[in-house]
Image (cartoon, rainbow, N blue to C red; front, side):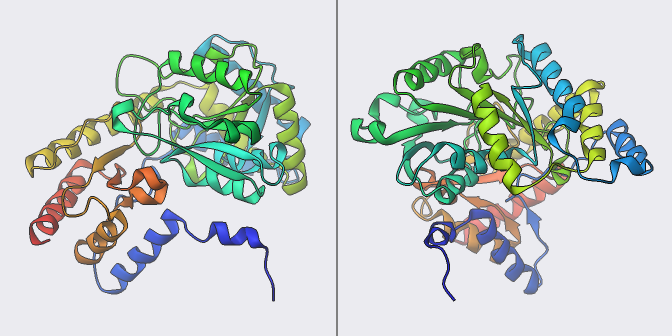
Length: 390
């Protein structure tokens, strides 16, 4: 039996690797504290659940859902965006429902890249961004992110031969895994760069609300209000704790939306209508639940950072997301995979190795703040014992 060569590029996956390590630790009798996956442990708001529950009793929601039947959801997404960022959006041509933003970032390269074309990706970055490029038989040029540059790529460092073959650039701020926030001035620079080099500019924006300071994380469309080259992906997984419902959407250039819609039409219909009804309730209802989610992750961030500092592991306090991006202490600075594997084997604490997010992630580890502060404190105690014994 023969398989496609593109599968060779999909062998490694940071989440699958850690899932195997967690399974082995559980089989050995360890109690797992899982800080490796950014899956919120908080519930969706009651009014969201009610909207989905009421839909279940309506048998008209039980059939296939095609694009034109998603009009109410697209209008809700467009209205939310305009109220948030002050930019008008056409819900008919500039919004597309998605089965999570990951579906959009993975499928869009199929609409943009021909075999051998380059995509410019953040390094480290979210793994599905690379996966979509590989599925499209494209090439990846990693844009290194370093603490010295505030985890922003240096666009001037991209070689001219790469740019001549490049078709798209993917950004994502607030950034997973480094937790960095990009200022609007950088987005303006990126838009101008992509316009100059005829690149599609993709912005993955799952952490739009998870910001722990007074300023609002900017949208790429604030730097490209005419939507000349840009498309932005949103999800309800983080702000509204709806990860398991798999609901997101894209907003942006009408031609890009139409192209992605063509790819999507060949792969799937839309979600169950009841899930879209729940998403409409989330976007149009009160945002108290979002505020509670942000406050909860801020409290967890402060508890976890404080505990790490008390054991002598000095890491910066993240301004956004649900993660802590920690530079590994000696002797682990060049082997994040072994650190995470050994940590879960000996303590049951699971984290994500920085190398799993790209070459420039080596030397770091990502902790997801998906437990209450007392459990996070227990995790740090176990980490302390591990560091002392190794």
